[in-house]
Image 1 (tube, helix red, strand yellow):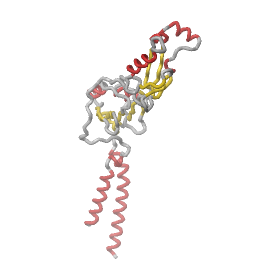
Image 2 (cartoon, one colour):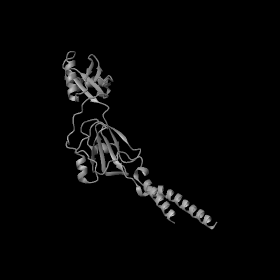
Image 3 (spheres, rainbow, N blue to C red):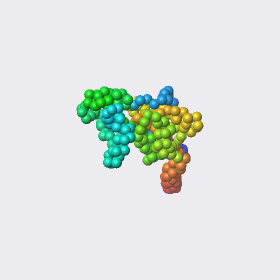
Image 4 (tube, one colour):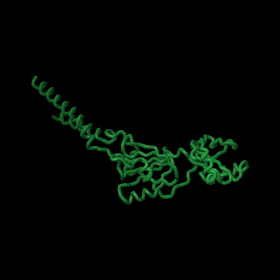
Length: 263
């Protein structure tokens, strides 16, 4: 009887091990310990984006301080000829590993390290040797944020079009928090992934939602909504099969033991 009790205890230990969330929810990412030192979001204003290697920028150049953009008579006539100015038709340029891009006339110029306004001023100064009062527009095309809304397969990549997108707006662009997500466990991961800053936001209350709406995201941030583990349901589905195996094993053991004792 003692041996049977030990074996039953062993089986129950196996069940307890398998009932952990890591076994039943192996897809859950970015786990943190209960005492994890989350970073404190001290600034609520967006920071100007600094151009870096790997960025893709669009570049537009106009003379006479961009007069052609707003000259209504020119726009009207060019529209009749089917040649209306469209600033969306700018060419993309890659900021290469040496921090430079290859621009018409100027050739290679280094832009990494500038914010957008500084880059525009710098290029206007360089093109002033060739054009009368040049006007430059620069946009970053590949700024993005990864959003995991709390359910598997629903992750999205959100393009950042300006500096003023809050955590709430980014989640809204991704379709909101999914039904399987924990609104009180929203994590924002920022910086180098080998040593990131991790912020935790509680969006389950009006106060937490208001605080989240005051903080602006940055390019390459990751917003992760922790999913529910659904432990009870998964224990029933997973442990049920294990219990069936255990019950069968115990029954077999009794049959074999009874048959052996009789002989």
